[in-house]
Image 1 (cartoon, rainbow, N blue to C red):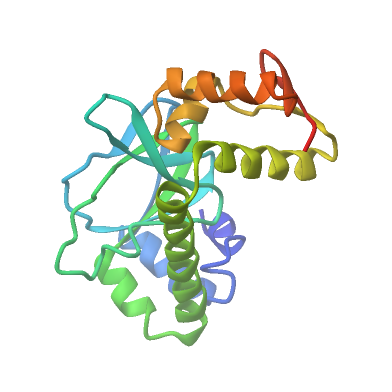
Image 2 (cartoon, rainbow, N blue to C red):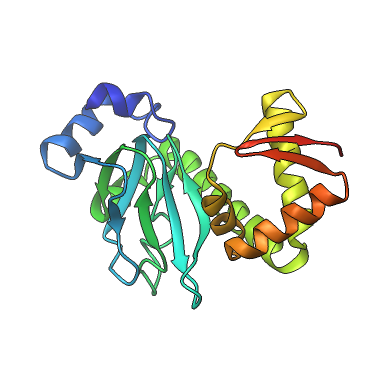
Length: 212
């Protein structure tokens, strides 16, 4: 466990003796979760942070319509719960769910309190808080300032850049894509059809060729 932790940004500059002591006292524990498992349920208390070693998780809420609104994604090196741990309202506002088999390190609140006295821990911890805040702000902007078409164009453009091709492969299902944007599947399908009819793209299952 020590070797894994030392490879993660949050602990890479922390002395091995300190980390080993926290492991021995049970303040840092390793947990594995299968795909489909809810790690934290909405409304439960945040009693520590989770540091992602492997896999992928999402923070999502359920809309009144029953669709999932994906607010944030967590991958290796990301921290879950850092923004809640020391707040007056420290309950998880959303469900945290594994979209892949995942491995997390759980670190107790008391351990975090002690580690925050170490400058080499504080800097990556604060940086993680900032990144989470930026991601949340981007999501809020997406929901409140842009149309579904604008969001789709941004999303497909990012994929085209990542995949270095105007013919892109969707990494998620259409249902997951609709959930990502917080819309119903029929709304997504209608917009994709309009974009196809207007010559902006061609669709073949998860393969999409874009013309913008």
